[in-house]
Image (cartoon, rainbow, N blue to C red; front, top):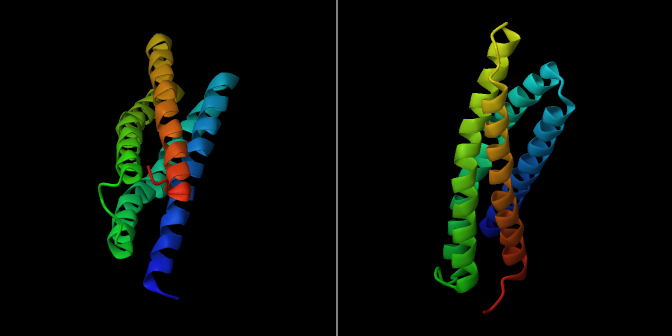
Length: 156
């Protein structure tokens, strides 16, 4: 097996991990939030934070590294429109994901304090959760389009 095929496989797997973990944990956390069970919310928040640490973060790092290597190795033009569009969409997803991680950590901390017997500022929790939810949409949509561009490699 040649190195390009290995890196391409790693790139595809990390894309699937990034996308799958993102949509899976978002759904899990959203469902726990909607259920209104505080124990379930805390478990979901802890699990979401852990999944981002173990799966999403490494995939976020692997994607541009493996992608850049494949572009170089394949002799593609770095400034092809389809590639520059993927860079912009990946950056958009990353710029949404960074505050999402901070919000997840904050929500988890709020829920942990509540579980320890301290009060929970419901208004602040709900506002942060809405921001978290809204930031997920451009990140998700951007990654869907990146998938499309990676598969189709349009010649615009």
